[in-house]
Length: 523
Length: 109
Image (tube, each protein chain N blue to C red):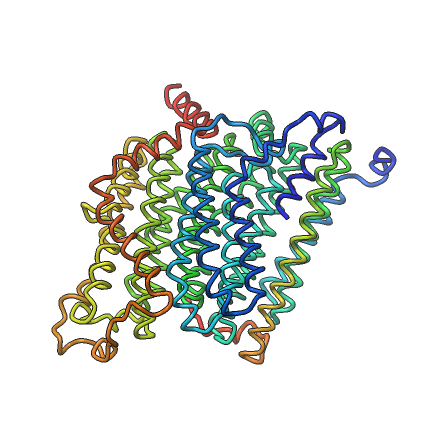
């Protein structure tokens, strides 16, 4: 459907039909999405052949599709920029970086989901196909530069996410999470559309760049209203307080591998959308949206980290912690400097590994014990050193303890914020980081410090560790991979810094915003 | 075609209608206890957007009609969303035997 969308756009964007034939659509830019799409269709076809064939062939097809997508993305890096589909899609370095984060998060989520799906008896063919559809939407969203393509890819991501959240059909909690997600998500989409229709009316075009220029020449109160509408949707997608109410419910009710994808892939796409819309389109309302986002960031960091203290469910705690983490990333967005944007990209990449590592440990624990209460982790180090070590490292990294990857990501964000005189944000960020370290460490303390006789009943009856059952080897690969990157990535973070910086340097949209910002500060 | 219609009904009338429809949708979204009614309210909001898009398309963008194309996409996606919404509601109804929003309280914030 997205392909058809851009094609229609292409046909109607041309005044003279004859010119269309001369114009290349530059469809190569969405080749990575093509690979994901082919994998999705192949998964659906294999799924028709029956459950056994699906169990055997679906995982390799998914790995091949996502691997190809990642390779194709690497080839697009720093390639000469040409708008595809007559301005509906742009594969700049920013889009490539965020699409890589999305594709990698799907790959890791799939690796940790086979065993979980096997154990819960859910058909894996459909599950993989819907997850790939969500990935497709998220990846297209990262590079969309037109209101229509933004809307269609946003909805592809959202509708697939609703289905994933309700995937455990017989579990009333999963269905309830899906319904709540769907109602809030559709309402947010409708609000976004209302804002988009106003923007179209104000500028007479749907291209984000053209709208940005039109708003610069004549900023009106109505444009400010549409900014509020559009911003509400962006805030919903990245789960910023006060648009976060769906997050804890959906995270608690949904299948855990789905939560892993939603907390990283969907959020990365949301931040890419925020950059495209706010930096690319609302340059005229720079002061206003930065003020609004400062408020959102302060609220998210405070509420997310404080409420996480009181949680007893691991999934719910990570849900609130992810709200707090989104608040940290917003510091980079508010800065609007070269360092700020680069820190955002870097932190998203770091967050991918540490959060998915933590989720891999939680899934492994719940596969073995069927529980995700924090108190059930007591004394775990005696029975399962791997989970204890992996979860400890990932949580320390999320809290920002050196020398983990998360520490360098966070210090870069705070440094960028301080350099741009965002003192309030940085101070709130530092204080709430301390709060977050408290609840992360209390989980670690629970696992490590407890005496064997204080261990929870769940841990006392811990099953013997087996890695040979179906779906366990991929889970182990994902777990070990994420934990190693989290632990070692901090020390070897130089290539990541360079990568994040060149992502910003290779994006004309961000460069213009940076130049504009520095002009203002001089003037 | 456009000139004749614009003489009769001003653009503001369409926008006002759309704004009212959108507000009714929001009101229904907040106040309905029946989940099916909530879904219907969301459809109202989306249709308000469609009226906006069509009106802008014929008054501002007469040559390229981007708004009309946008509206077609909105209608298509709204259909997909409604189908998924009803499917999820059906599976929830099978589990809980109710569509009352107040009773969906297994997950609390």
